[in-house]
Image (cartoon, rainbow, N blue to C red):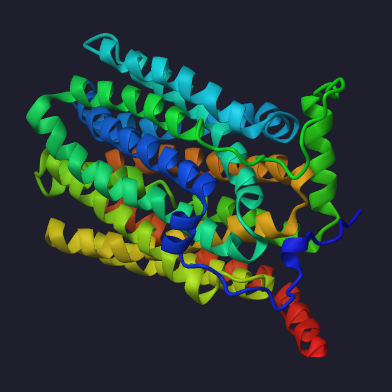
Amino acid sequence: MTAAPPAALVDAGAPTRKTGWQLLRTNRDFRALFCAQVVSLGGDWFATVALLGIVGELSSKPGLAKGLIFVAQSLPAFVVTPLAGPVADRYDRRKVMLVVCAIQAVAALGFLAIGPGRLWIAYLCQGALTALGAFFGPASQAAVANLVDPEDLPTAMSTLGATWGAMLAVGASVGGIFTKLFGRNASFIADALSFGVAALFLLMIRRSTRAKQIGTGPRPRMRPIHDTREALVLARGDRRLRALLPSKAGSGLSSGVVGVLTVLAVKKYHAGDGGTGLLLGARGVGVVLGPLVAGRKGGDRNIARILRMCAFGSLTYGVFYLGVAGSPTILLAAVFALLAHLGGGAQWMLSTLGLTLATPDEYRGRILSADFALVTLTMSISFVLAGVIGDLWGATTAVLVFAIVALLWGLFYLRLTAKLRDDHAIEAAADQ
């Protein structure tokens, strides 16, 4: 079963694509979604810096304990995917996001109860936030194509992709300073408030977040297993989806290195929460620039180019994390981390763009949710392994190991997608 390409895939001499700034200035619905994401992500990274600090202090094995925080930021999403994807396709996506924000605000306040003998609360609350976020992410991403014109979709995806990195950079860096000045509890409260502000922005969206309005008649009964299987049948019958779905999952195998950054800051560079904020902030700057650069160089409807740039993104990630492993100072490590995530951010945005373009709207929530589930599973495995390797042989060794993993995946993905890329090149030449 191969679905016909959606209208967004038809290259029809469309109007000139807007820049990110023009899109934000002229499209109020997209602007509202953008602002909601900015506020929510900023609060999340405020809390992450504080959370990593308190977990490191309360645990006798800080490397593994911090790694498990990143697991709690990823694995629960995999568990709820069979429900999250169908919800994004069967219900009003804006309402889904509003409900999620309200519950996340309550869950974030749970961090205030963390203390000696209550470290489990950190993982419980973070897991709850992640599980809820697994409903928000696919709903938000699936809605984008319905809030902007088809020719502006690459710009919209790169702009939203950059916000994640921007808020990581700003939230982590400012969060480190904020936590030092006002304490960790203040950061947790700021996180809870951010979800409320995000909900206010979502209320401003007026355009439908679905290709077709939900009818007034009875809504079809949601069957999570059947609905998920239906999307997987679609993916199995479409060569583009089969090539794009492994992209993030493979890159997730090397994501554990991010958890090791916090250990490097404290153990190797003796820089505390401020150093953690610096390295995570540098990572965020790279994730900001990656989608923006990719949006200009590869953010079109050419699937072959998207696949190639996804592979190069993984290779870039691996090369510069080799630099992080050998850095004698935290400032140099931050520069290399920035450059590594330039590739990682581009890879993430382009694979999401490719899936959005190749998937019909009625399946988009489930396909994007499946994509997110696969990467959260591989990321969770990677974070645990990185924590164990870091505690046994040191953070530098862990960084080196996962840099090599990223390089190997990039080379493998180039080979995996070679035939599809060649076929697309032949088709493009025949069309000219």
